Image (cartoon, rainbow, N blue to C red; front, side, top):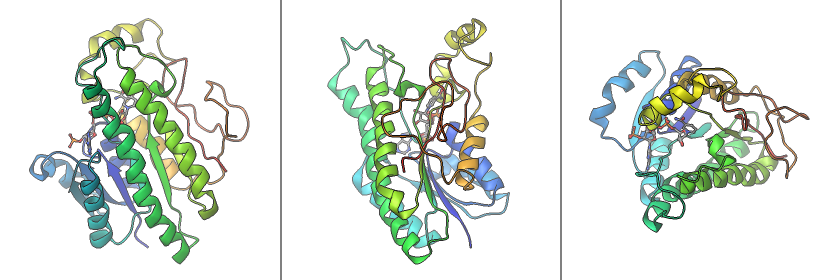
Length: 275
Ligand SMILES: NC(=O)c1ccc[n+]([C@@H]2O[C@H](COP(=O)([O-])OP(=O)(O)OC[C@H]3O[C@@H](n4cnc5c(N)ncnc54)[C@H](OP(=O)(O)O)[C@@H]3O)[C@@H](O)[C@H]2O)c1
């Protein structure tokens, strides 16, 4: 049976890294983004060249109507959603000290990163529950791309950190709720990845990386995250879990700590499933 993955923000950066890896594993792709379809034609053609069906669904995940529209169109045109990758995310338009953060910037970042992720997950989770009731053997999962900022405090972009910490709880909540349906919910917390989002701070991080910021002295690439997501989507970790209350640590303890991903020394990417 055809497997369909919906990837938000899948036409560039980390999302594209994930899309490229999933298409190699023969997933059909529903790629979401806010840009006009004309702007992503080349990327869609590249993904399609690998064989599987690839469709683009324009829409802002921060808007309720857009979310409904995206999910109902994917369902109508592609038949199902087996994997949801909540990757779309934004940084504040302007980095400001938390003593000066504006309500406008707070709402802007939270509206996409947290509210959008929560309610898109809710929509797709309901769809997946129905799919699992029809065919319990079929593997479905949800993968949230949060950030090391879920645990590391950066006082010049507090709203971003709060949105990513909140995404950690979105993961925990849906993992706990969907456990009875055998739908794992994972989270990847990337470190410093070379994308448009980090282009503006490239020189700063080039220097920090030279000075021992990360375990490996290089930028992470979207493909590094793509490989992790593809492994999760492939169903290789069906029984990964972290006991509620445990915080991510740079070393693994217990059955839940399965992957140490590129990131800073303080908080490395991880994924988990609450049973
Ligand atoms: N880069 C890093 O170092 C890093 C580290 C940790 C976590 N992350 C997280 O990883 C994710 C991807 O980041 P990135 O670096 O790849 O960013 P990016 O290069 O700026 O790409 C962001 C993607 O999200 C899409 N997007 C933005 N707002 C959206 C909205 N309202 N609705 C739907 N799609 C939307 C964009 O769509 P368009 O292409 O149509 O504009 C784009 O495809 C984000 O959640 C980010 O917070 C990044």
